Length: 625
Figure 1: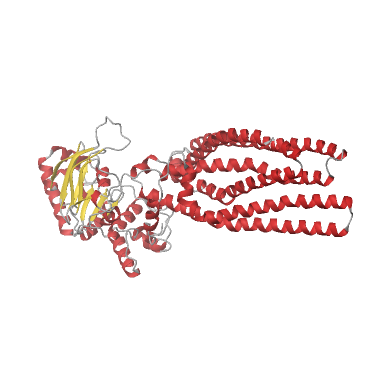
Figure 2 (figure 1 turned 90 degrees about the vertical axis):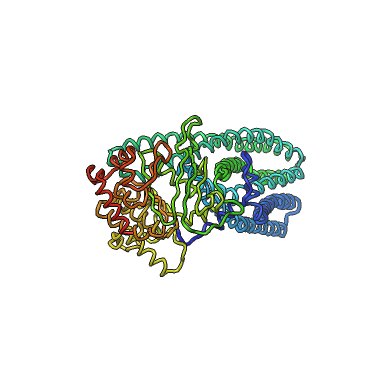
């Protein structure tokens, strides 16, 4: 995670790519990536073909030398022949070197571009997409699949073209040597073509199966590593290991089927040319004995056949590589072809940043919910004044967190309107919208980076002094003084997902990240649940200072958090049924009293329900601000 990098160029490029068509991965690869570098790749293929042609010319020189020495023995003929073959060998080596020089750089550049575009695409896809896809599948598509594409462009594709040219030229040279041998060798093309067609279909299915299983395996390993504490705590490490062994067995079976399919094809294309050469040897000896063919021609034929044997045998590997690459591309365009249902308008609105937040008859149903199921949210209406703090309370599963996700368009509201500064969020540029808003999620997500970069993730000011001031203020408000005790302070690498920290420490850093961003609208999803009471009091006091000019909607699971708010909204059965000051709702709303009494708090029930105590807590919150 690098906070200094801007995703804008990558995002714009990814959006400008041609839309992939299902079942047409190769045309998509050509249009989107290969066409600009086709010249260099063509030169690489030409270099490989020239290397093969140089190798095919050596048998012709050898035939001439043998026949000339047989009729007119001469040292000069031998020296000229050796010199020509040496020259052709040097040309062959130089062309192979040129092939690598021409192909490696563009192939690596294409792999990088595809990986960057896939990452940018993943960043732009809605949260619902990521809910449906496992991280292991996305990881395998962005790493191993694209590496396979790069290897094919740098080697497989170039060698396929050059091998085809080499075989065609070799057959012509065989025809010039003796038409009978040409026919004998050309006959093998028919069974090879039929075998290639059958092989391609079977190998494609096998390759796709292996790739999908590798993605599932990556997901299992990732989840096991991330959840290692849970597995150890419940003594289920062996159980998970057995599950992994079962997955490995399935992957092994798929890999063996893939290998046996490839082995069957390679065995066929290896055996057929060998049998052909054996038949040609018998026939050639007979023709030489009858003076119907010169010894030089027979030697040249076998030398030419030997040169062609390698590309013929390699054709199985090359076809297999092509099929695997095609499957990898198909998996790639499954992601690149996903239509974004949340995107910025062509002419976005640019309202003044005031911090007004309004919801009018908002409804929402998750995309994977049953069509006949009740919507999670329906008819939700709220209005927050600039600088106002509102607490959102409700029973578990009432849709509080989901409602927060609709405001920055992490999910799209199915009904109604969400207004920020008077403009519908659909009319705002998504980046502009998310600059005005900062969110602290209930699950504190941190990145494998320094404390500073995690906290300043939303800070766009690159001035070192301004960033330092923002960091210090945010850590102070969030009571994250533990950072000073870390080995390298704010420069300490906190490890993957911050698991080296306690839950309360992670939550305080996530809260500090929101504070440092200085948004006009702040959305807090139970940001204090992992804190002890004394730390929570100090954090609330600090938030009271920084929230003075910030509009805040906070999901509350503690009465002390509710006391931070100017007003409280009660979410019941997917809609807001009451809005008002905390003490008024306690007096007038029975369901609100039930929800407050059930909140997870260390306060006593009597204190919670005592109106005077609640009014005192509310007044304390106002004075703190």
